[in-house]
Amino acid sequence: MVTNPPKAILHSVLSWLSHEQSPAPLAVFRILFGLLMLASTLRFWAQGWISQLYIEPQFYFTYPGFHWVQPLGDPGMYLIFGLMALSALMITLGWFYRLFSVLFFLSFTYVELIDKTNYLNHYYFISLVAFLLIWLPAHRHFSLDVHGGRVSALCRVPRWAVGSLQLQLGLVYFFAGWAKVNSEWLLEAQPLAIWLPARSHLPLIGPLLTYKATAYAFAWFGALYDLSIPFFLCFRRTRPWAYLAVLAFHLTTAWLFPIGVFPYVMIFASLIFFSGQWHERLLAGLGAWLAPMARSLGASSRSTSLRGSTGLLILLGIHFVIQLAMPLRYLAYPGNLFWHEQGYRFSWRVMLMEKAGSSEFWCWML
Figure 1: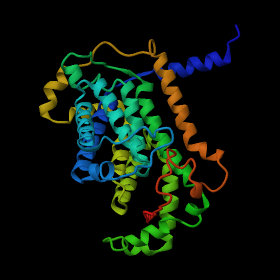
Figure 2 (figure 1 turned 180 degrees about the horizontal axis):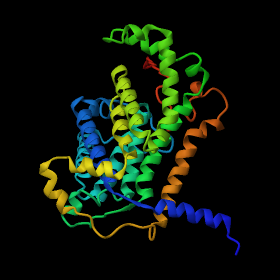
Figure 3 (figure 1 turned 30 degrees about the vertical axis):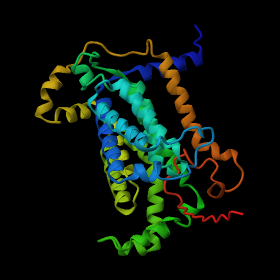
Figure 4 (figure 1 turned 120 degrees about the horizontal axis):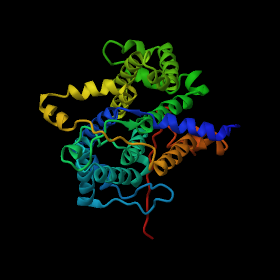
Protein backbone atom coordinates (compact mmCIF):
# COMPACT_ATOMS: atom_id res chain seq x y z
CA MET A 1 0.00 0.00 0.00
CA VAL A 2 1.50 3.32 -1.11
CA THR A 3 1.01 6.18 1.28
CA ASN A 4 0.20 9.60 -0.13
CA PRO A 5 3.05 11.73 1.32
CA PRO A 6 1.19 15.10 1.31
CA LYS A 7 -1.85 13.49 2.90
CA ALA A 8 0.32 11.74 5.49
CA ILE A 9 2.07 15.00 6.34
CA LEU A 10 -1.26 16.82 6.66
CA HIS A 11 -2.56 14.05 8.92
CA SER A 12 0.54 14.31 11.12
CA VAL A 13 0.21 18.10 11.36
CA LEU A 14 -3.48 17.90 12.26
CA SER A 15 -2.75 15.17 14.79
CA TRP A 16 -0.06 17.33 16.40
CA LEU A 17 -2.36 20.38 16.47
CA SER A 18 -5.18 18.37 18.02
CA HIS A 19 -3.07 17.00 20.87
CA GLU A 20 -4.92 18.00 24.02
CA GLN A 21 -3.48 19.94 26.93
CA SER A 22 -4.56 21.95 29.95
CA PRO A 23 -6.73 25.05 29.36
CA ALA A 24 -5.02 26.84 32.28
CA PRO A 25 -2.54 28.80 30.06
CA LEU A 26 -5.48 30.33 28.18
CA ALA A 27 -7.21 31.29 31.43
CA VAL A 28 -4.08 32.90 32.88
CA PHE A 29 -3.41 34.73 29.62
CA ARG A 30 -7.01 36.00 29.55
CA ILE A 31 -6.80 37.29 33.12
CA LEU A 32 -3.42 39.00 32.74
CA PHE A 33 -4.27 40.47 29.33
CA GLY A 34 -7.57 41.83 30.61
CA LEU A 35 -6.01 43.38 33.71
CA LEU A 36 -3.22 45.00 31.72
CA MET A 37 -5.66 46.40 29.16
CA LEU A 38 -7.89 47.75 31.92
CA ALA A 39 -4.94 49.48 33.60
CA SER A 40 -3.68 50.82 30.26
CA THR A 41 -7.10 52.23 29.33
CA LEU A 42 -7.54 53.91 32.71
CA ARG A 43 -4.01 55.33 32.42
CA PHE A 44 -4.89 56.79 29.02
CA TRP A 45 -7.91 58.45 30.62
CA ALA A 46 -5.98 59.74 33.67
CA GLN A 47 -3.18 61.24 31.56
CA GLY A 48 -5.63 63.27 29.49
CA TRP A 49 -4.55 61.54 26.28
CA ILE A 50 -8.10 60.89 25.08
CA SER A 51 -8.71 64.59 24.61
CA GLN A 52 -5.14 65.39 23.56
CA LEU A 53 -4.95 62.77 20.81
CA TYR A 54 -8.53 62.18 19.69
CA ILE A 55 -10.59 65.30 20.44
CA GLU A 56 -8.39 68.41 20.30
CA PRO A 57 -6.55 67.87 16.96
CA GLN A 58 -8.12 69.51 13.93
CA PHE A 59 -6.60 67.07 11.44
CA TYR A 60 -5.90 63.34 11.55
CA PHE A 61 -3.49 61.34 9.38
CA THR A 62 -5.65 58.37 8.45
CA TYR A 63 -4.53 55.06 6.98
CA PRO A 64 -5.08 54.38 3.27
CA GLY A 65 -8.49 52.82 2.85
CA PHE A 66 -9.59 53.93 6.31
CA HIS A 67 -10.23 57.63 5.72
CA TRP A 68 -13.80 57.00 6.85
CA VAL A 69 -12.56 56.18 10.36
CA GLN A 70 -12.96 59.46 12.23
CA PRO A 71 -13.06 60.35 15.94
CA LEU A 72 -16.44 60.75 17.61
CA GLY A 73 -15.55 63.92 19.50
CA ASP A 74 -16.61 64.66 23.06
CA PRO A 75 -18.23 62.72 24.73
CA GLY A 76 -18.09 60.02 22.03
CA MET A 77 -14.41 59.19 22.50
CA TYR A 78 -14.82 58.99 26.26
CA LEU A 79 -17.66 56.54 25.75
CA ILE A 80 -15.44 54.44 23.47
CA PHE A 81 -12.70 54.29 26.09
CA GLY A 82 -15.29 53.52 28.75
CA LEU A 83 -16.50 50.60 26.62
CA MET A 84 -12.90 49.50 26.18
CA ALA A 85 -12.29 49.52 29.94
CA LEU A 86 -15.52 47.63 30.63
CA SER A 87 -14.66 45.06 27.96
CA ALA A 88 -11.18 44.55 29.44
CA LEU A 89 -12.72 43.96 32.87
CA MET A 90 -15.22 41.46 31.49
CA ILE A 91 -12.46 39.62 29.62
CA THR A 92 -10.53 39.37 32.89
CA LEU A 93 -13.55 37.92 34.67
CA GLY A 94 -14.53 35.73 31.75
CA TRP A 95 -18.10 37.04 31.92
CA PHE A 96 -19.97 37.27 28.61
CA TYR A 97 -16.48 36.71 27.27
CA ARG A 98 -17.29 36.29 23.57
CA LEU A 99 -19.33 39.49 23.39
CA PHE A 100 -16.80 41.62 25.21
CA SER A 101 -13.84 40.13 23.34
CA VAL A 102 -15.45 41.34 20.13
CA LEU A 103 -16.27 44.74 21.65
CA PHE A 104 -12.73 45.20 22.95
CA PHE A 105 -11.19 44.28 19.61
CA LEU A 106 -13.50 46.62 17.69
CA SER A 107 -13.17 49.57 20.08
CA PHE A 108 -9.39 49.28 20.49
CA THR A 109 -8.73 48.79 16.78
CA TYR A 110 -11.09 51.66 15.90
CA VAL A 111 -9.07 54.01 18.11
CA GLU A 112 -5.79 52.85 16.56
CA LEU A 113 -7.09 53.44 13.02
CA ILE A 114 -8.01 57.08 13.68
CA ASP A 115 -4.50 58.48 13.27
CA LYS A 116 -1.43 56.62 12.05
CA THR A 117 0.92 59.05 13.82
CA ASN A 118 -0.17 57.35 17.05
CA TYR A 119 0.96 53.93 15.79
CA LEU A 120 2.97 51.84 18.22
CA ASN A 121 4.03 48.24 17.73
CA HIS A 122 2.48 47.08 20.97
CA TYR A 123 -0.88 48.64 20.04
CA TYR A 124 -0.81 46.57 16.87
CA PHE A 125 0.12 43.49 18.89
CA ILE A 126 -2.77 44.13 21.28
CA SER A 127 -5.20 44.32 18.35
CA LEU A 128 -3.91 41.01 17.00
CA VAL A 129 -4.14 39.29 20.37
CA ALA A 130 -7.64 40.68 20.91
CA PHE A 131 -8.63 39.27 17.53
CA LEU A 132 -7.24 35.83 18.41
CA LEU A 133 -8.98 35.79 21.78
CA ILE A 134 -12.35 36.13 20.06
CA TRP A 135 -11.90 32.64 18.64
CA LEU A 136 -10.09 30.89 21.49
CA PRO A 137 -11.85 29.08 24.37
CA ALA A 138 -10.12 31.19 27.02
CA HIS A 139 -13.38 31.49 28.97
CA ARG A 140 -13.95 27.75 29.32
CA HIS A 141 -11.79 27.48 32.43
CA PHE A 142 -11.68 29.58 35.61
CA SER A 143 -14.26 32.13 34.46
CA LEU A 144 -17.61 33.56 35.49
CA ASP A 145 -19.09 32.17 32.29
CA VAL A 146 -18.36 28.69 33.64
CA HIS A 147 -19.27 29.64 37.21
CA GLY A 148 -22.66 30.94 36.07
CA GLY A 149 -23.36 27.99 33.82
CA ARG A 150 -23.29 29.98 30.59
CA VAL A 151 -20.71 27.56 29.17
CA SER A 152 -19.38 24.21 30.30
CA ALA A 153 -15.88 23.89 31.69
CA LEU A 154 -13.21 22.17 29.66
CA CYS A 155 -10.60 19.87 31.11
CA ARG A 156 -8.54 19.89 27.90
CA VAL A 157 -8.10 22.10 24.85
CA PRO A 158 -6.28 21.35 21.58
CA ARG A 159 -2.68 22.41 21.19
CA TRP A 160 -3.55 24.97 18.51
CA ALA A 161 -5.57 27.00 21.03
CA VAL A 162 -2.51 27.77 23.14
CA GLY A 163 -0.10 27.46 20.22
CA SER A 164 -1.74 30.28 18.28
CA LEU A 165 -0.85 32.76 21.02
CA GLN A 166 2.65 31.32 21.29
CA LEU A 167 3.13 31.63 17.54
CA GLN A 168 1.85 35.21 17.47
CA LEU A 169 4.27 36.20 20.20
CA GLY A 170 7.11 34.25 18.59
CA LEU A 171 6.60 36.10 15.30
CA VAL A 172 6.82 39.44 17.10
CA TYR A 173 10.13 38.49 18.69
CA PHE A 174 11.63 36.88 15.60
CA PHE A 175 10.81 39.69 13.17
CA ALA A 176 11.92 42.28 15.73
CA GLY A 177 15.29 40.51 15.68
CA TRP A 178 15.25 40.13 11.90
CA ALA A 179 14.74 43.90 11.58
CA LYS A 180 17.87 44.50 13.66
CA VAL A 181 20.09 42.58 11.24
CA ASN A 182 21.29 45.67 9.39
CA SER A 183 24.52 47.64 9.26
CA GLU A 184 23.24 50.65 11.18
CA TRP A 185 22.19 48.54 14.17
CA LEU A 186 25.00 45.96 14.28
CA LEU A 187 27.99 47.84 12.84
CA GLU A 188 27.24 51.38 14.03
CA ALA A 189 25.06 50.67 17.08
CA GLN A 190 22.59 53.28 15.89
CA PRO A 191 20.37 54.73 17.22
CA LEU A 192 21.45 53.31 20.60
CA ALA A 193 24.75 55.21 20.40
CA ILE A 194 22.65 58.39 20.50
CA TRP A 195 19.93 57.32 22.91
CA LEU A 196 22.00 55.69 25.66
CA PRO A 197 24.34 58.63 26.46
CA ALA A 198 21.22 60.76 26.89
CA ARG A 199 20.39 58.52 29.88
CA SER A 200 23.77 59.07 31.58
CA HIS A 201 21.99 60.75 34.51
CA LEU A 202 20.50 57.43 35.63
CA PRO A 203 21.84 56.01 38.90
CA LEU A 204 24.30 53.11 38.94
CA ILE A 205 24.57 52.45 35.21
CA GLY A 206 24.48 56.05 33.98
CA PRO A 207 28.27 56.43 33.44
CA LEU A 208 28.41 53.13 31.53
CA LEU A 209 25.84 54.39 29.04
CA THR A 210 28.26 57.02 27.74
CA TYR A 211 30.60 54.39 26.26
CA LYS A 212 30.23 53.34 22.63
CA ALA A 213 31.02 49.76 23.67
CA THR A 214 27.86 49.76 25.79
CA ALA A 215 25.78 50.72 22.77
CA TYR A 216 27.33 47.88 20.76
CA ALA A 217 26.68 45.41 23.59
CA PHE A 218 23.05 46.48 23.80
CA ALA A 219 22.65 46.31 20.01
CA TRP A 220 24.06 42.82 19.61
CA PHE A 221 22.36 41.43 22.70
CA GLY A 222 19.04 42.92 21.57
CA ALA A 223 19.27 41.31 18.14
CA LEU A 224 20.33 37.91 19.49
CA TYR A 225 17.69 38.05 22.20
CA ASP A 226 14.82 38.76 19.81
CA LEU A 227 15.92 36.11 17.31
CA SER A 228 16.40 33.35 19.87
CA ILE A 229 14.09 33.94 22.83
CA PRO A 230 10.93 32.31 21.39
CA PHE A 231 12.89 29.12 20.70
CA PHE A 232 14.43 29.02 24.19
CA LEU A 233 10.97 29.60 25.71
CA CYS A 234 9.65 26.56 23.86
CA PHE A 235 11.91 24.08 25.64
CA ARG A 236 11.37 23.06 29.25
CA ARG A 237 15.06 22.98 30.19
CA THR A 238 15.86 26.44 28.85
CA ARG A 239 12.49 28.08 29.67
CA PRO A 240 13.27 29.32 33.22
CA TRP A 241 16.53 30.92 32.11
CA ALA A 242 14.88 32.33 29.01
CA TYR A 243 12.16 33.93 31.10
CA LEU A 244 14.79 35.50 33.36
CA ALA A 245 16.21 37.02 30.18
CA VAL A 246 12.71 38.24 29.28
CA LEU A 247 12.43 39.95 32.65
CA ALA A 248 15.92 41.46 32.47
CA PHE A 249 15.48 42.67 28.90
CA HIS A 250 12.06 44.26 29.22
CA LEU A 251 12.55 45.75 32.68
CA THR A 252 15.80 47.32 31.46
CA THR A 253 14.11 48.82 28.40
CA ALA A 254 11.24 50.06 30.60
CA TRP A 255 13.79 51.79 32.82
CA LEU A 256 15.79 53.30 29.98
CA PHE A 257 13.10 54.32 27.51
CA PRO A 258 9.57 55.80 27.73
CA ILE A 259 7.82 53.02 25.82
CA GLY A 260 4.64 52.73 27.86
CA VAL A 261 3.12 49.33 28.58
CA PHE A 262 5.07 47.45 25.89
CA PRO A 263 7.60 45.80 28.27
CA TYR A 264 4.83 44.61 30.59
CA VAL A 265 2.74 43.30 27.70
CA MET A 266 5.67 41.18 26.59
CA ILE A 267 6.56 40.04 30.13
CA PHE A 268 3.04 38.80 30.82
CA ALA A 269 2.45 37.43 27.32
CA SER A 270 5.65 35.35 27.46
CA LEU A 271 4.15 33.29 30.29
CA ILE A 272 2.03 31.52 27.66
CA PHE A 273 5.08 29.34 26.92
CA PHE A 274 5.03 27.77 30.40
CA SER A 275 3.44 24.37 30.92
CA GLY A 276 -0.19 23.76 31.75
CA GLN A 277 0.81 22.41 35.16
CA TRP A 278 2.67 25.65 35.93
CA HIS A 279 -0.40 27.72 35.05
CA GLU A 280 -2.64 25.44 37.11
CA ARG A 281 -0.43 26.07 40.14
CA LEU A 282 -0.60 29.80 39.43
CA LEU A 283 -4.39 29.74 39.32
CA ALA A 284 -4.50 27.70 42.51
CA GLY A 285 -2.37 30.32 44.23
CA LEU A 286 -4.49 33.35 43.33
CA GLY A 287 -5.96 33.43 46.82
CA ALA A 288 -8.41 31.86 49.20
CA TRP A 289 -11.25 34.08 47.96
CA LEU A 290 -11.06 32.37 44.59
CA ALA A 291 -11.08 28.87 46.07
CA PRO A 292 -14.89 28.42 45.99
CA MET A 293 -14.97 29.51 42.37
CA ALA A 294 -12.05 27.25 41.55
CA ARG A 295 -13.97 24.27 42.94
CA SER A 296 -17.09 25.23 41.00
CA LEU A 297 -15.06 25.44 37.84
CA GLY A 298 -14.07 21.81 38.15
CA ALA A 299 -12.98 20.13 34.97
CA SER A 300 -15.69 18.83 32.73
CA SER A 301 -15.50 15.54 30.92
CA ARG A 302 -15.97 17.47 27.71
CA SER A 303 -13.02 18.59 25.64
CA THR A 304 -12.60 20.31 22.34
CA SER A 305 -11.42 18.52 19.24
CA LEU A 306 -10.63 19.38 15.67
CA ARG A 307 -14.02 18.06 14.63
CA GLY A 308 -16.05 21.12 13.83
CA SER A 309 -12.95 23.33 14.09
CA THR A 310 -11.76 23.05 10.49
CA GLY A 311 -13.14 26.46 9.59
CA LEU A 312 -11.45 28.03 12.59
CA LEU A 313 -8.12 26.40 11.71
CA ILE A 314 -8.43 27.78 8.17
CA LEU A 315 -9.12 31.25 9.59
CA LEU A 316 -6.10 31.02 11.89
CA GLY A 317 -3.99 29.72 9.00
CA ILE A 318 -4.93 32.73 6.87
CA HIS A 319 -4.19 35.03 9.80
CA PHE A 320 -0.68 33.67 10.24
CA VAL A 321 0.09 33.69 6.52
CA ILE A 322 -0.71 37.41 6.64
CA GLN A 323 1.45 37.79 9.74
CA LEU A 324 4.36 36.18 7.92
CA ALA A 325 3.88 38.35 4.83
CA MET A 326 3.40 41.74 6.50
CA PRO A 327 6.94 42.09 7.93
CA LEU A 328 8.44 41.08 4.56
CA ARG A 329 6.39 43.38 2.32
CA TYR A 330 9.12 46.04 2.46
CA LEU A 331 11.04 43.89 -0.04
CA ALA A 332 8.53 44.91 -2.71
CA TYR A 333 9.57 48.58 -2.45
CA PRO A 334 12.83 49.89 -3.94
CA GLY A 335 15.05 52.24 -2.01
CA ASN A 336 16.02 52.64 1.62
CA LEU A 337 13.26 51.54 3.98
CA PHE A 338 14.35 54.00 6.65
CA TRP A 339 13.77 56.89 4.24
CA HIS A 340 10.59 55.98 2.41
CA GLU A 341 9.13 53.84 5.26
CA GLN A 342 6.98 51.82 2.85
CA GLY A 343 6.37 48.61 4.76
CA TYR A 344 7.83 49.95 8.02
CA ARG A 345 4.70 49.78 10.13
CA PHE A 346 3.07 46.47 11.07
CA SER A 347 6.42 44.68 10.71
CA TRP A 348 7.79 44.67 14.28
CA ARG A 349 10.56 47.19 13.66
CA VAL A 350 10.91 48.07 17.30
CA MET A 351 13.05 51.05 18.34
CA LEU A 352 15.11 51.16 15.16
CA MET A 353 14.80 54.87 14.53
CA GLU A 354 13.31 58.07 15.87
CA LYS A 355 11.94 60.92 13.80
CA ALA A 356 10.41 64.22 14.79
CA GLY A 357 9.08 66.97 12.58
CA SER A 358 7.18 70.21 12.74
CA SER A 359 5.58 72.52 10.24
CA GLU A 360 4.14 76.01 10.35
CA PHE A 361 1.65 77.41 7.87
CA TRP A 362 0.88 81.08 7.18
CA CYS A 363 -2.28 82.05 5.36
CA TRP A 364 -3.15 85.43 3.93
CA MET A 365 -6.68 86.39 3.05
CA LEU A 366 -6.56 88.27 -0.24
